[in-house]
Image 1: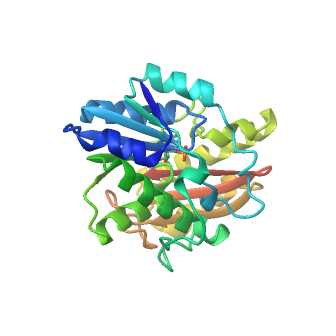
Image 2: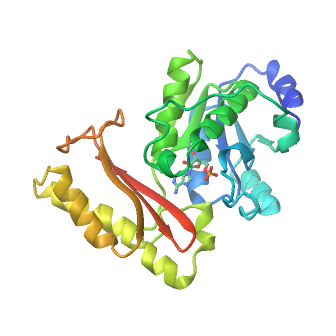
Length: 273
Ligand code: AMP
């Protein structure tokens, strides 16, 4: 596995390679969720590039940028074992300068749900993803469905900026107890982790109701709120695949999203129906 930190050196290295290229952008502290993205990228492409970069522009003041888990040595090992060809490991000063051109998240879709409590977060995400996609120029880029709003906005950006990359959504990987894997789960104490299990439980309850033909989204959301109580709920929302609020569940075109704060930890989860 080649490790490259300089963006121009990576571009140069990839310039003359005539192979299908799968790209998996991450912020490191890799877990089975990231590995699922890498595996799928390996299956579908001749060459796989993974990036590890904790992007400062997507953290708001007072968020966990400084504490964000760093596991560089373990991450390198995981990438090597997973058969990654190139690990891109830039520093902030190699990706950003001062007074830069930025990508702005759209006014509505970028400022609802997670964007409502983290205004500007998605502009930072889109800006770094634009940079990374331009550096790597992959055939396909892999993103987890866990970050459903992020995936939606990146897909919009790629379409609206006529970018030549296929965005591939990958299913959520969960722990054996049902909690969606996240690098931030290590912040949770044992008690907090037990409380956090209300999140997958609320989604399971929603799917059970729907299987009994309950389609009214208000009714489903109310049942989910009851399960999640007394956790600090940021939002429970039921949308279609275009991220528009719907009154009735439409099988094949519905996403149920939850964001909850447990202690100081923001936890996201969702199911696609
Ligand atoms: P992160 O390192 O948290 O920025 O995540 C990097 C990529 O991995 C993103 O596309 C995430 O959506 C994806 N990801 C994170 N957790 C999971 C998970 N549990 N299952 C599937 N994909 C995930």
